[in-house]
Length: 137
Length: 388
Image (cartoon, rainbow over all chains, first blue to last red; front, side):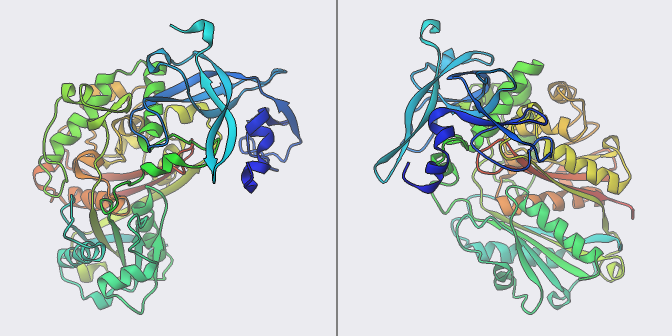
C-alpha cells in the first residue's frame, strides 16, 4: 500500500468505509467526491461502515486470465449492506475458496480480508468473497 | 445546419492479416473508398480527415497517422478514440465538421491491428486496482449481463446462442468477414467455455482490419454521386463508470440514451429502423441491444430473436454483415465498417446479404466500456436513403 492511490484508499480497501450521499442515499466506494454521481447534488457525504458480507447480483466464472490468477475464478457484482441500514454499496468482487458451481445470483457472500496483489513485493490488501462456511454445498 | 451524405465506402477483407502492416491496411481501405465514389474523386478534394483507432499495436500516432497512410497532408487530421465506439465517433465527428461548414469532403478512416500482440486485451484484467474490475476481462464484463438477464427475465442460454447462429449465417455470405462458417445452437452452447456463461462462439474473434468512408456536404454531393445515403441523426452518450445502476446490470443505458438522441434528430422512432448493424462483441451484447435501442421491450430480447425479426429476411434485420461475431472486431475499423454496410444496404448494393425489406432507415451502433467497470459509452448513427 505504499503507492499513493493505495494510501488514499486505505479506509475503503482495508476497513470497508464508504460515503453516502445525504440527498439521495447513493453509496460510493472508494471514490470520495463533491458531486453525487447518481442524483447530481452537491450533498454532504456521511461516513458509513459496510458489513463484511454481501449479496451476489450477478457473476461470471473466469476460465482464462493472466497467469497471476488461479482459474476457474468466480467474479461477481456484489451489493454490500451498511451496518446501520440505508442502501448497499455495489462493487465488483473476486471470489476465493469457492467452487464455481456453488455461486448463484442472490446468494450471500462473506467478505474476507486478503492480499489482492503485490506491487514491488509489497502487498495491497482488501476483501475477496467466499460462500459462507456453514452454507457450502 | 447543412445536410451530410455518404459518397463512398471502402473496406478490406477482415481477418488474420499478418502480411499487412497497419499503414498498408489503412491505405488499402482508403483507396477502396476513393474507388467506390460513383463519379470519382481526387484525394486532393478531401479537406478533413478523422482517424479512428485505439492503436492497439502502437503504430498510429495521431491524426498524422491518417495522413501518413493516405498521403493526405496539409489538411486538418485528427485521431479519435472512444473505446469500442471509436469508429462510429470518428464518423460522427466528420459529420459534425461538415454540418458546421468546416469541411465539404471528409475522410473517416478506421483501422486496428489486433493480432500483432499475443496478449491483446486480457492483460487489462491484471489491473493493479482494488475496486475497478481486477480479474474482469471483456467476456466477463459482458457475461455479467448474461447471467443477470437470464436470472431476471428468464432468458435462456439457447436464445443467447441464437445470436451467434444468425450472425455466422450472415457472415458466411459476407465477402469481407473474418469467419465464413456457420454454426448451430448446439455448437455454441457446447463449445469451450471462455467465461461462464459465455463460450467460444459467444465471443467475437481477434481480427485485423480497416475501413474508410467518404462523407460530403449537401453543397457538393452532386459532384460525387446521384445516389447518396444521408445522415439522418446521431447520438453519443456515457453512463457512470462505477455507479452500477440496476439497469446497467441487464443492458447499457448509454445505448438507450444515444439512440434516443439519434432518433430525435432523425425525427423517427425505433419502429422505423429497417436494418441495423449493432455491437455484438458478444452474443449477449446484441440481445440486450435489441432492448436498449427500442427494437423490443426491456427483457424481451430472447423473444425477439426467437421471433426471427432480426434475421436477414425478418422485420428488422440486425447485423447482415455477420456482425462483430463473424466479421471480426478490429476496434477502430468496426464502426466504420458498420456504417459502410448500412450505406450499401440503403443503396440496395449489399449483394448476398441484402435485406429484403427495401430499407429506408438504417442504424449503426457501438457500445464500449471503460476499464472493466460498470459504465458504458455508446454511439448511434442513423442513415437514410432519402434526404432528411
